[in-house]
Image (cartoon, rainbow, N blue to C red; front, side):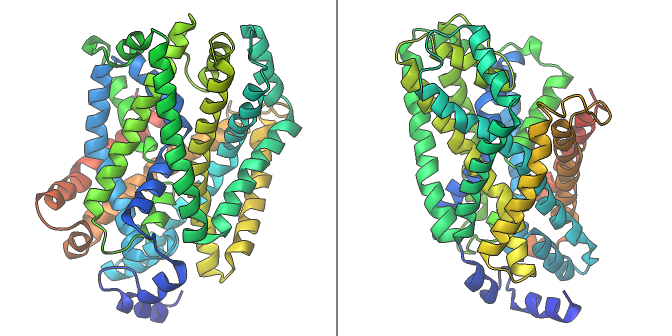
Length: 468
């Protein structure tokens, strides 16, 4: 983009999105729709299995308090910064950064930060859809009664058979990608809004139904104690780093999606109140997920395990042993699939947004081409669990390598750059206009300038193994 065109774009801004841009790109129809979309982006597979587990292993209620503190001083300020960039720039991530860099009078190379978001979403989705495909496939596995009366070896065999079969894993991942692309292609109002208006309420309803069932098991108190019994002796320096890291990743920060969603947000909407709502809802979902999962695990005499093992082995074993387990199993994996799909949409949207704006493509063409690239890259992640499992790079499979590069390097460094840009590069007047007046702005500005960068740097060093 030439300096002349950039000047024209910037001239259309009165502290935000140009009229031409919003007319072409569309806006969220309401604050509620943005909240549903942003919460959907944040609520993913990690909320369902990782947060409850790390809470129980790091002091229960003590860790919850620590995590809430990290959300408040690191997660929410950075989420506000990312959405602020998107709304003020009114473009795809790269375009927004380019416009705002000129507005601030700094190098246009800052657009690389936006590019990092686009690339991160592209790469993340390529391996995320593989795991999401497993979740979708388990809806039908649970519905078929395959878990009924199964032993741990039987359940392990089911999961092992799925991941070791490249054709099956590819097929289910392709279904997830096709659903995601179909929603994206239809645009903001006809695609994203309609999808979120169905999936997010559906996710909340199913989650509450599962909690209700967990109460009936007679082990609800044990689940509550596992998660919330405060044992401050278990809190260590590592616990702090884990809480910081999860606060960063659980809000879907630095993946390009929140910046893109922010570009569809009207100037009439209070940024601070909206971001706070998203942060609270994301945390509430994570807490409720633990209250739904662990009573079921304890009621069946099982051990809560971390990672995919809890979702695809431990819980299916419980579903096979308990009353109405077949129905509960189907509901659980429908909920998990909703969580995966809402996150997948936010990962695909930045790249499609860039192609439609920068290359002038229709959303149909952009969605198809982007999805094709992601699908090809996803094959490497599929093969990491079968035909390529013995091929590693620096001791990591293809799947683990992509995960390490994005979550260990690109995302933390992008988050750090966002904090620096909004806290130190953008003018006080520009950020004040977006965030609003009062003590809330002063607290945000202090945190984004001084506290958030230190916290993200700690997350980065911990992720690469330099700080344990």
